[in-house]
Length: 216
Ligand SMILES: O=C(O)COP(=O)(O)O
Ligand SMILES: [Mg+2]
Image (cartoon, rainbow, N blue to C red; front, side, top):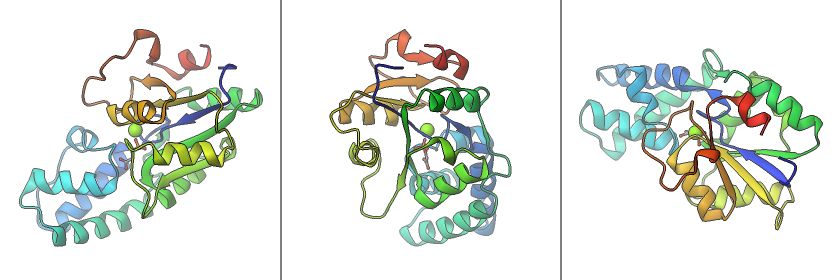
């Protein structure tokens, strides 16, 4: 890890298992609209492109989907999710030990997620993870979402690491494409929410447990 100026992490499905809280809030919105609930596996497969896409996919899976219904569903979802942001969400095993070790080695660390910024900050605060990071960049109005490289480039800029060697660590094809688009190295956590094969990934880039990542 010492060869990197900074390590930047995705959040949902990478550092934290947040799908149970996302699932619960999605079902609150679906129930309020008279829709059927979805199971955890289905909602988990919808995570990774931001909450707007998550709700759109939930609506498409349960009936008609119009821009008006999406706005209503997203508002109900966000109210419920913000009230339960770390009710079930926990860091993956080994994450805290790994972040502690990297922090002690003085490497710059950031988070780049498609989760709304406020929610990303609240998850990190609620799980006592904020202290490890010099930058937490989430989805913002006017900022394109991953796989556009903009949020990752913004994270690198906030870390003042432009021109340095950067590693991005994520759990999805979106994260892999983001790293490619930004021209940075990539590693995949296989225990997250990957729902499609990642093209051109070497075995050495994939890890199954955070203790493995930390000792590499
Ligand atoms: O899709 C989301 O809302 C967040 O997903 P990410 O943290 O994996 O980018
Ligand atoms: Mg993710």
